[in-house]
Amino acid sequence: MKVKVIPVLEDNYMYLIIEEHTREAVAVDVAVPKRLLEIAGREGVSLTTVLTTHHHWDHTRGNAELVHLRPGLAVMGADERICALTRRLAHGEELRFGAIHVRCLLTPGHTSGHMSYFLWEDECPDPPALFSGTLQPGLIHLCNFTVPSLPPSDPLSSLGDALSVAGCGWHLEDTAQQMYQSLTKILDTLPPQTKVFCGHEHTLNNLEFAQKVEPCNDHVRAKLSWAQKRDDDDIPTVPSTLGEELLYNPFLRVTEDPVREFTGQVAPAQVLEVLCRERARFQLALEPPQPQVRALLALQWGLLSTPQEK
Image: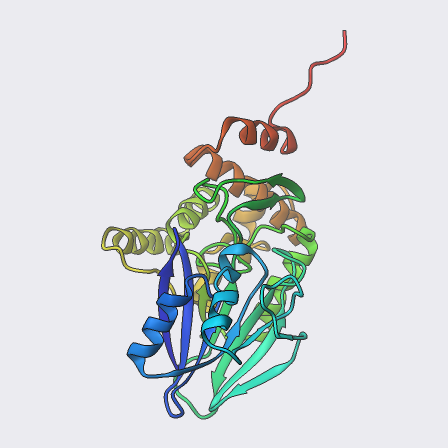
């Protein structure tokens, strides 16, 4: 199994997964179809299937054009809102592409129909892979609060994954408890050597926030230094592994004392809730959005108080 990491849009990734014996290929989250087809042609593979993690624009915008260019192409996902969907998948369903097995893991939180994909090959020494998806420019829900029509260039408009390097998707359409259960499902089900391929390049900001949460965590410090070098050289930081994420990702460390102390909470879902809110505050401080959006978010998070009655 060969994975081609394809940077697209402002900070998205789409992926081309190649079965090296049959030369069949599967794409994940198609945003720029002509670029995908160009790479598939260069690799000499036959693209048969698109796996979509969720319905947001920056993960599905290329589906319709791709189906037009490649009639008969299968577009799969768990949410009927996915553009050009030809087959709706269920949690636990397994697919097969030559030697590649795919297990579909429903991981709601970021969206109610968010699907992560776990891929492996039998009797292969290479570690398995998890494709964990991301979020849409143009519409963002923070802590169950909707801010419509953010432009794609807005710093808040492309944040969030089911699981990303040193971060996770903010619980957008569901509750913090559901997001926590989704992350637990991933950790309890998959081996620690699993490679994590997320949908956005947010590693540097995620690690800067992780350092704020756990300033004494040596793993965070080392990973941040590594990510800064990758950023300077314009090299992707994906993939990481689940085992690595447990060392420095605060969203997977919600039972650790330093993370609990930072949030002032003990219950894992409540710790996750506060982390999501503080991650949003942190991003606002780095790159404030338009004034009217900032005011709405500040009211939602309780950063502004309404005047007291006289």
